[in-house]
Image 1 (cartoon, helix red, strand yellow):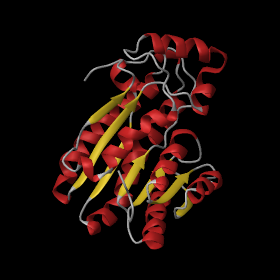
Image 2: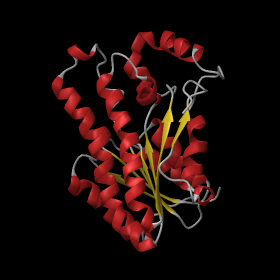
Image 3: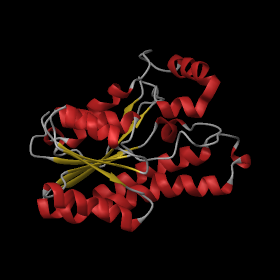
Image 4: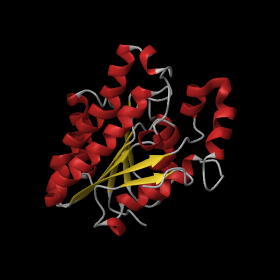
Length: 252
């Protein structure tokens, strides 16, 4: 799968999975726009070390002006947008607890970033993709959406909404040859996972592994193949789908 001549936007790209997506697109010849509320200088350096062109933009996905500026800068720098990876999400900073003990403000923030943020970014890139006559949007959901993760209802509900959003957008945007799909990973060994589980991390990873058909821990690189496939012309007639990358925990 090659992306020479393609322009890819990755949100939530300052670290972890987002940074790995950016690296792999750059390695395959894409021009990559990386955005985050955090500084993306490190990720930009990774892109450039792969010999690719890159652009780093500070973006708040919950703010329409910020997402529109992201899309404008990408189109101005590289001439358009072909692929959007909606990776930005609240996860590592969340407090997990029984549903009746969750903080209302944190619930609202989770929905604002994880659901509204995708909506905002899709709206922002739509004009450019329509001008291109095609495009691919890949939304990052989670195993939590289909498994029903306890003590994290705000995160679980937000990631379930991503699947519904993906299906609805696929119906709306198909006439423009814009495809919309989702990838739903299991727990991945990233900085955010370490932040969520703290000193319980190893025990949680062991329990997660015990429920997988293929009992190999997921690393950031394991998710990349599905994202690349859904972004590429190899999946030109695939839309509205959710691919589970979970070691065989849930079968759709």
